Amino acid sequence: MNRPALATTALALLGALSLTACTGGPVPATGKARAADPASRPDLKPFYGQRLQWADCATDGYECARLTVPRDYARPGNGRTFVLPVARAAATGPARRVGSLVYNPGGPGAGGASSLEEGMDEAFGAAVRARFDIVSFDPRGVGGSVPALTCEPAEAEAEAEAEAEAEAEETSEEASDAVAPLYPRTEADRSAAASGARTAAEDCEEHSGPILRHVGTEDAARDLDVLRAALGERRLTYLGWSYGTSLGTSYAEQFPRRVRAMVLDGAIDPSLEWSQRVISQSAGFRRSVDDYAEQCAEIAGDSCPGANPQEIRALIERLYQRAEREPLPVAEDSAYAEYGGMDATAVLGAVSMAMYTPEDQWEPLSEALREADQGDATKLGALDDEEETEEEGENPGTADEEQEEDETPEPPADNSGAALTAVNCLDVPHPRSLRPYWAALAPADQAAGVYGTAGVTAELTCRDWPSGGRRPHRVDADGVPPVLVVGTTGDPATPYEESVSLAEQFPEGMLLTYEGLGHTAYGRGDACVTAKVDAYLVKRERVRPGATC
Image (tube, rainbow, N blue to C red; front, side, top):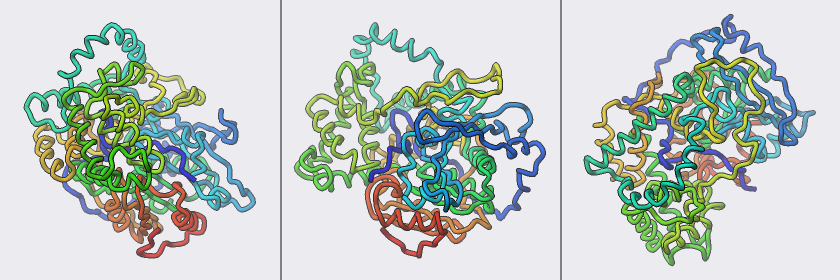
């Protein structure tokens, strides 16, 4: 069985940022004293005392509710809140029910409630579905959260459509002048990259300013504890994919004794500073594209765009070089038509995204690459299109609280891009000077080629972002029970080495290695992974050192 589509992390897709990025040197664990249980604070009791009011979701078979959390945990009584959608799939074996299992599908920027309604519970093994209610939520600022992040005014899309037709010919003529290189070497290219990043940050500040400083992972982890209490659970059972491992790690650090069982699949190492993070992830994508060239025939068969790995690598490199000179042509109904075609960043993004699930994506990627090489990049541009339904992105109900005048405008149907940027930039400050970014380009190029340099450039938006309080550090979670980390040897977005490192940082951390390709392991159909993860979640059965599937 293939796992339902996950909204996972990406490298540098059309300006999106790489995974959780940080600045400064690694900070060792401090052994800090644990704060008092927040549920005992009088100003937080109204939030911790909630009980969810469940009702049928729009999708049959699921129940939905809403959770209210303080916008600012330092001032929870000021009346400003986030109201978060929550969804659950009831345990299929209620007589033997253990409790609730909360998951995060990734991102940052993926809506958990919507993912569950789209069938995410099918990613869990039958043993887990029988014993647990599967629960997820949209993190603060994401999806159906009220308020939600947006980096553009509500009328922007309509205005863009109105102008598109009049500017079509001019856009096509000017496209070659607007192409951004994957490795900005000249002063002009670097100035343009910095200017574009600054504009992006300013747009988010303008349209989501009041909430930008309140959407970080540490606050989302505190929301997770409020959800635990609202579910009536004394301790949390949790599974996080990709970015969800950052959320889980933060929860374990803040509430180590509130953890019952925790699975972190496709791990992010919190000890890496921002440029190390870029190199780690971009090198992962480069290796995955090499894997694609080497193993295309085994997975994609006759659709492969070359007779051997060398031909496939040459074709991909050829497309990058062409797209840096001039956008690759697309059909008039393509999402890239208004930009004059696919530039090099868009091509790299499409290729990178196809590395997430080789079993599903390598065949269409192969066909798209072949057609792009022949002069039509329409299929390549459609690879990262997400199917949308009328329900996606809509708030399942509205908050009871009257929103204040400083609220953000209505977000677009999919605000995952804005959320990806906001959370990544806020979690840990980036350098304010441009010099460290330009200095990082050469090492990133040496380690990962254009995947590395594009990753560095994508981080520029964070230079002008509000500062958060996190720093790179080793996990500090004394008292947490054994945590299970799952790492895939051929993972492009969360390289295996980071899973190894995270497992070592947790007290009594356990590592389960999946020898395979693609992003994350649990829920992708491997019986060995399913059996070991399910046994841990249900019976808290430990995984032996060196366990491999």
